[in-house]
Image 1 (cartoon, rainbow, N blue to C red):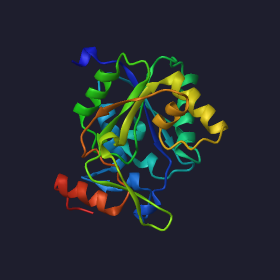
Image 2 (cartoon, rainbow, N blue to C red):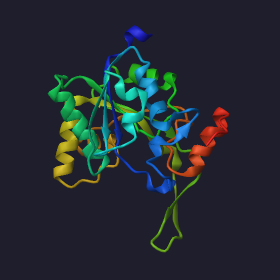
Image 3 (cartoon, rainbow, N blue to C red):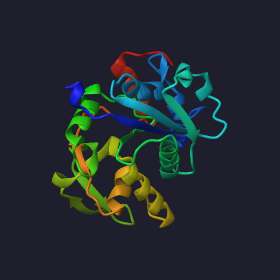
Image 4 (cartoon, rainbow, N blue to C red):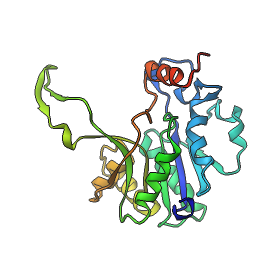
Length: 236
């Protein structure tokens, strides 16, 4: 199966501060099972034989990244992050272009604080989208009843969940198409919450690839606690 998967670049936007964690450092540098969250997020890509290289967008003067062993990995190229996620991803794509990457190359963008990506999910995404004209993303169908709130915080309606998915990462698109969508969207002041939303704004329909629900993004302290308990990690 490995030989049939396409080669790809990985991009990790890691310039955020994660204020909702209320920690003494950005959440991607908190410990999980003897490694930082960021190191776990990188490992699934670095261990993959089809990886062409990885670009990580970091905050200016980030004091934590240089202390990690993976900072010396020649496959990882750091670039300056931007004010928003879209800016950080665009900076990484500009670096890939400057390094000679082709517009038709696949790029997988993954959250720095999503450390539980399964290799099986990564391989499924690569296999399902290898010949797709647009690209797509890992996602999970909504399981709970969904409510739309009004301005006063009361239920306005119950939303039909049969067509609702939670967007996860990695999100996989061609380098040229993603570059154009992000650049044009930022110039037009479009709200870009993830790479798929930029591609959608450009007039395309990304494909949803069902992944595992435990590929969670660490946003609040309870998320990290859940992962620690799952891994049997009781250190802090």
